[in-house]
Image (tube, rainbow, N blue to C red):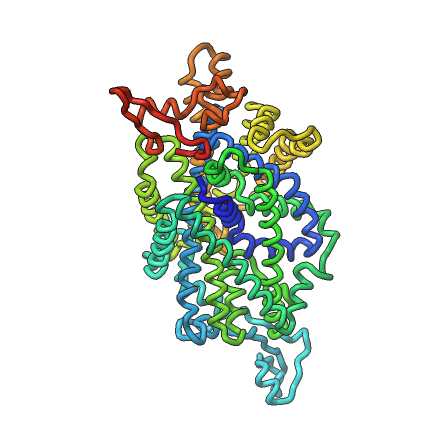
Length: 617
């Protein structure tokens, strides 16, 4: 069990609130109408995000099982749990690489001046802090000559707008990211060697993750007191500093102020962006919510937990935007550029635009250290939950061999994932990170979410599931469930299906900026996607073959709960599950669990059941 309710809530908030809240949401809001974007964002939270979040938390808590074993409720859908674990594994590989980038930049921030603040020895002739503009003038002999702004100032001359030519340049922060941090190659097919400073930072990231999880939730539940709270401290500091800078309000106006464009709501792409941001930001369909909730006590109020975490996640996204855009507004002001020209998303915001902005502030190393330490902590608590998802699934599936070897399985998982992630710290590493993100954290999750709703609501039974929840949080009236029934039975699955179809119809081949991927890279991405979802029909077929009887009888069996499905402890089974076989009974016949008391009396072996307050063995 979690040591306390606070451990669980902070772990859940840390899992849901990640890098995307800081580097993706503010840009999406700015791009999709500013303050107007909050309308579809809130609607998607109510119709898609919150219903699925509540469903997964309830599902894991009810059975005290991880994302694979919990499908004892609907064996035909067991492959959905396997897909979730595989997606979490792929995400863990590239997510820790991003944490490794943050660690590298954190170490690099202990310098003055910051190494990306100017074009130093590592830069080339294309590096410049200012845009290069030339004027086409006519010389005394009638020929055309290009002169720069210095010549114009020295000769007290002006240049007509039609005669001004701009030459593309790269900022110091952009060249530092490409040439120093990544040592980026020309494409996916030019891997180069291992970038050792990134490999060591990645190793350090995995050591931190392994150390925090060596005792499972007992240790990670304490670490998150720092990793989940510290980002809010930094965001508040950055916001206070940001709003005191000249030009800050110009950035905020662009973000969510008077530049808001309500007409954007007529664009279908805006609604798709709102739905995908909510869906992925809350970390639904990754298996982590089921895994973390499985360690709750049976009567924990998972309904209020879902409300608190979802609202906190969304408020954090909006709040982070103010901290980001106040600083970007200042940089636009002093650079005499519109905010749109200094705004980027994803890697561009985290490792190019914002570091460049921080380098122009007084005491720039301090602000840079705070920012990258915040990115580090944001990434770590999400990574804790991802690895916990993998280890929980393995322990629940193989309790006889792995239940008492938590530390060993955590170490093995971290080592294996580190080795698999080494291609991501080569010269082509950023292309691999982008490829995995493009294919493994999009459609696969949407497919898993739709099938999860179908399995629980339509096969297992939505009304039966509601009764299960009421066994945990108490009886509720008809009107309480009206909204959840509408979402679970119709609105959420339809909405997610529309988003999935729309995403497939508007598919574009992956690229990193202007650099396209080779055909084999795109094909490999589709193979990764297929590898994740192929286990859904495989496990359905396996469970069908394992069932007994005729075809219809076998289908009935794999669409019905297994004999040991229900609350883990017998004292929680009540009248509805009193005839179900207990997982305790099954496991006791195979092994002596650590939490069982073995008492020898009069040469008779008696085994006493664990206390009802304990959920998981």
